[in-house]
Image 1 (spheres, rainbow, N blue to C red):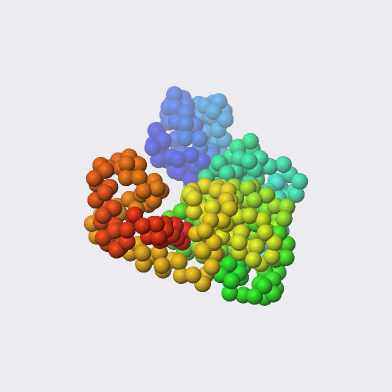
Image 2 (cartoon, rainbow, N blue to C red; image 1 turned 45 degrees about the vertical axis):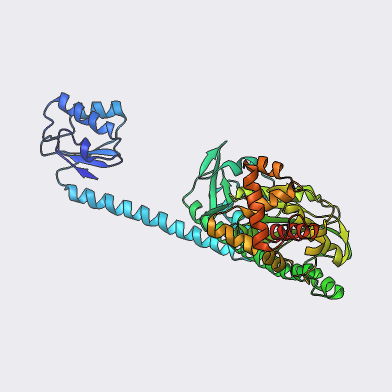
Length: 456
């Protein structure tokens, strides 16, 4: 509310006020009409005109201009002080505000009770739909509907992945749901309401709970698979433990492995990746040695699982090497498929199809062989030299072996003079006390480089 006797009160109005005046400066019809016009520009709620002081009644010019502007005019008798009007309006506004807050708190309580009822997100969405009298849906980043009320409502879920903040399209209001400042889902409805931000926070809590459960399951399943891969459990024990997670070891399975690029174990990317469900039925996922493993039973397309994993990594803002293993039966088959997937993943970023297991992959499949340590021992002098002198002996050695010992090819690939290549070869031989002209030493170098690449 605002009380004014100014001819132009616009600088002090923001809109929606009840303006009170006695018209002290509005002696003529022109000034009265101009005063009303200026109030109309601010879109006030109403004009209260005090009569019995400056004017015995509301001036005709004021009424005429107000009627033209669609403005409500109240005649305030002399016996009614403006402070009484102010108190009346304040009490009504406060009462309405308190009522809205109370209704909002009641709605919050209803939604919280629905979520905690044991029926989860489905009960929450159903309660919200009844509350706002509009369809409601929650979907994850892949467009998978997590809950919807009514259940058969049609939603343009293909649009959700392109939205990064609250947006409206085709009469659809979309609220991103964040967990740890990362969008994990979307709450969608066809009507705005004050209770929706709180509903979004409750959806976030439920998604976070589901993520924690999924991550825990994957970590536990990963411990079992890690023992299987390393061959530290018997076939009978492995079969029993794998069955706990829905993996029937006697059947045929294939492994798809996702290794985040340049991300150490426990990194933010792999942590978020472990929170993201893979929308494929009967596929068990686990975390093994810093990579996400999908164990596919017979009938599941390995390519589809690999590309889904790759898509999830890209949605998380990262890159990964995805490897696909072959289809094999039994506990030993799981192990073999895992190493095939890991060797395929070593070929580079993106999805890599399986290839027949190489000799290096076969050696890596045995945890009894300390290949990582042996490789580090062979390459340590070159690694130390490169670190101390900003050198490129490891790069030169790999190029030399890839070029089958051709100095000219190495010089062309690395854009070096041939004498520079020969000088580096001599340094490599001197530092390692091995000869690149000797076949046995070349095999040692090749195995060391391959092991370093596959186990990095």
